[in-house]
Image (cartoon, rainbow, N blue to C red):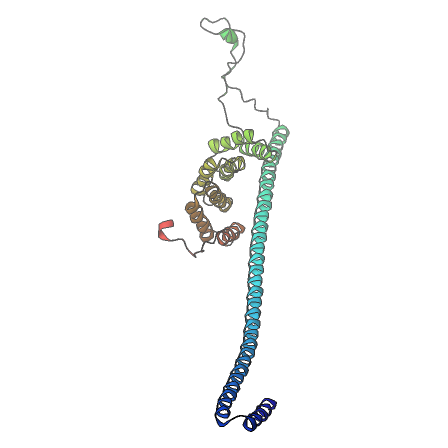
Amino acid sequence: MRNYLRAFVILLCILGISAPGAFAANRDMIALQAQVQQMQEMIVSMQQSNDERYAVIHNLVQQTSDSVGKIAAQIDSLQKAAQAQQGAQGNSLQQLSGQMQSMNDSLDELRARLDKMSKTLDTMQSQQQTLAAGQPMPTGQTGQTAQPGQLGQPGTSSDQTQGMPAVQPPAPQAPPLDQLYQSAASDYNAAKYNLASQEFADVIKFYPQSTQAGNSQFYLGEIDYRAGNYKSAISNYDATISQYPGNPKAPTALLRKAQSELSLGQREAGIRDLRSLINRYPQTPEAMQARSKLNGMGVRIFAKPSAAHE
């Protein structure tokens, strides 16, 4: 408003002093100055408006960026928590499986000892009954004693000539099953793996149809597994599963077989056996450990293995 008033005063002064031509020129100049002033004011206003809009947009972008960062941090934290929980669960299952296996080993050894003690008691009772009946104890020797009339007969041996019984050399026999298996289990628990391997092999050789034979086959695999001989371990575990399918150690054998295959880089074979374990023994701790392993590998768990994997 002041600018307009000032311009009006100047205009009056010019009108009073200048000639009519000069008055027209000054009027155009004033009008041009007014337009320039108006345009400058519009530019300033537009610049202020743009600055305000830029500040608002910048704040929105910053807030959005902060929100995205927070969400990404939360997702990363959740993923790490899930992985840690899964790892802890897998370790817990593995520890539980190891503890159960150790308990089973001790139980097998105790059973073997009980069997031996039971047979010893039976033998002692039989001997007492024999003594009570007044019967002579069996000597286990074969042959007959020479008669007096046979002394000095031609063609007889010196032992027969002297009246000694002819004793045949006994045929080699296998140790009793309970004694052999107990010795093998004791040596295994004492980490005497070379000796235990020989004794477990003898159990399988002399008593192939016994439950202890299936256990012995499994422990041969365990000895190889602990030594890092995964190929031999797979062979022993596979024999346990195929030849003794009803053995209580079959689920653990199948789990160990899969672990051995994965240790050798045989991923497909390991996945196949883990799925087979889940399908054949779904309620066992070994099946839970197999599920955890497959989840950790990012492998989908099927209810049943496909036909190509059966």
